[in-house]
Image 1 (tube, rainbow, N blue to C red):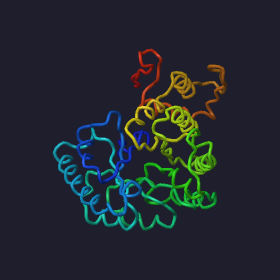
Image 2: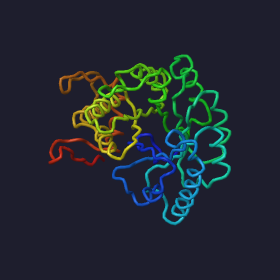
Image 3: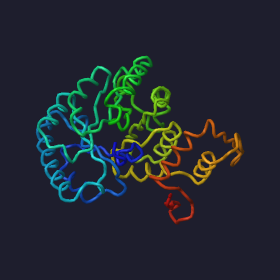
Length: 315
């Protein structure tokens, strides 16, 4: 898979309704600072009545992007995905639209049962997959284990960038909404995220963090982002451009983490003390490798600039 399509390159994945007229312009001219990936959404962000308009608008976007890719290439664009409403719409898009400028599809309501349908439609294309875990099955440990074991040996595995956790849909299943002053981890989703990390993490699947819909509450967002990182999640769904800078900052690596990671990967000692904590290369090696990869993409956070953030180049 193209290194550009690494899960670490997702960052803040901004969802934009397919009815927006400025999507192509946003992509081609990098109108949103820091945007690494976006999803043109035909599902929850678009009402049923607006689907015809959304599909017409999408057709125009695809024409513009396809032509621009032929003449300019797309290496400087954010990663671009489409989220169809269901498998039937996904099949229709693949059969009837020029998706040459699109990196992949976000697969809504993904389950083990829908996997063959999606793969039958996508196998012969260049498109990558980002399945969204957001159905009742996600609460079932046995079903999630079966899904993980199937995906790890499935032909789609090499084109699967990350699994997205659909927090709001999962909360809706248990008739809940996140309280305004609490993170998602303070709700039943805390258990669900831990369970998914425990099942998919050992098989090297990347998982992305759910959206924080309380756009103006930076305190809740900051607390939630720190927990996203602590759980090893890669990137986070965003619904507003103002969330991007906070997500990017959270994904940066502290100097202490970077120093520990380098020592862990280069030390000949079995155990050593660093910054008041024990480091054990045999058990911390995978963590260290992921920290260095995150630092390569997002940089190192320092407190030496006026705004408290300075991006240090990482070789």
